[in-house]
Image (tube, rainbow, N blue to C red; front, side, top):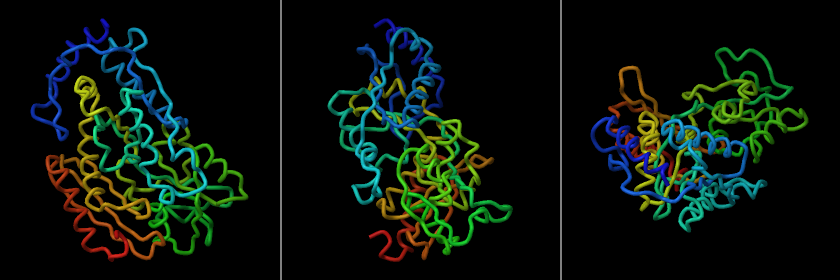
Length: 351
């Protein structure tokens, strides 16, 4: 109990040092008013990458608040999700990307865990009633990478896809990656692949399966597998998924004490980018069957640049646009860019 009693003063000091004003989630800038039982139960998926992310959150939270290192403050709870259980079909066929979070939401709401750690790109734009994003952590590299098998090679200068042989088979479960890849290289064929990072790498390395695959560079970096990236794709060439590379932590909406605690580790730049990207995604209201990309970044002059993309899965149509504006307009920029893309897409894509 003494841990969080001592923590009150530290949180208050850190939150006083934050820029004035209310952040996009409207959290209060004051210390928790009372104590809570320990340990804090951290929900996570059970994959190697998900477990790394949960442990990274614990490390960052402990570093931000040194008194959290005293005793057993955090307790890891792996939760099996529907998205992990079904590996032989695309997410769109079994209910959408929310299946990576559904059971974690349920564990939060019924009190089995106090907070849950997610890849932001796996979270629905509308969370279940009673669940909120409490913080977004500093973003990793949001780009995608080509994973090349033994049959691939060659000079990729000027053409990031030059390493792929003509008519090669490329494995991915992402229609966003598929649509952009086939738009650039209609000679390729795409096949479905599911499973964790290690499983996908093994299938490409084998040499008798797909010639290549695509993975998020953030996951490779976190698992210390950066060397597996054959070609790292510029986000203007392969627009990332909204929220890619970002770890998000959810809590119960009424747990103001924990929400205020987590505000200490909120990364302000990541929050601005994720606000723009999720507003874009919400305006498009696409499903897992719709190739949608969104990438926001701060420019050297302090302005925000947001790229949005919509395509057909077969690559026969692709629309990519950009907007720039002030960081305070992140949500508006995302909503307006999304509305413009929706307006100018063929009716069959988003309906």
